[in-house]
Image 1 (cartoon, rainbow over the protein chains, first blue to last red):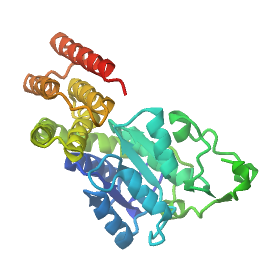
Image 2 (image 1 turned 135 degrees about the vertical axis):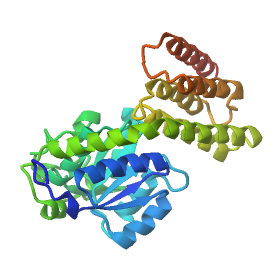
Image 3 (image 1 turned 120 degrees about the vertical axis):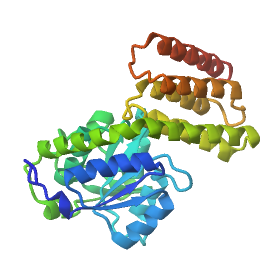
Image 4 (image 1 turned 180 degrees about the horizontal axis):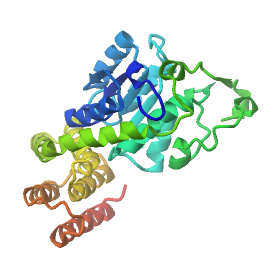
Length: 172
Length: 163
């Protein structure tokens, strides 16, 4: 347990990436944080099976994969009636870093976005963000997922605007 | 008109916080230090990891050369994209730059325009040279010239085939 006192050892984390080195990197960081229960999937299809089997608390997901992409997987997590937990926080890792890509990820229902290269501090801050600053969920025509009100790559991540009262929102 | 559609907003219970406790939040500095130390133990493997990723790229190039269909094209892009995202972590930022140029080239060409293999090969060779000579300093003059040349060639190609 570190200064912030999180019991990361109680978390079940699913790491989805078709690149074995990237999985090793991410799991090494998570293990050093104290996460013990880590499931790895090398494809979106395999991840879907693990999701339904293990019901993880957090998903760390790569975007670009052969077969089922990270974006498609998250849409399944959020909207498929057999998904075990449509609210599960998803942290997306991506080499795509343009605003357009960040918006696409947001529109698919990711909670947090990490632009590669992955840094330890960013991984920690996104993990803390999903624990401390869960966003309200919204269901509107064509979308179900975390409220997308924050705009822009930095704002998308940052906690600055999270004190707003969801009840006051009339449109996202 | 969008407001005619019903909007449901709700706050799911924070099961995660209930599970891990802690707080008021913030960075767990001890955990970050542990992770930095753990990452350090991996650095000896990074060069081999780059070599593996380059092998995947070469195989994807060969597949595309043999059968230039959309799957082969996507595999080539994925291989370049992976290297672009990972090479900085593996202490090869210049390789990431070359891979970014290759990704841009493949991404900017419309699906109907064949990917020029000679330019793919130029990128692959540059990556191999940077890796072989362990050019890890972004200020390396030779590598900078190489990268600038590749960027220029990709710019020319993109301009000629603007989507």
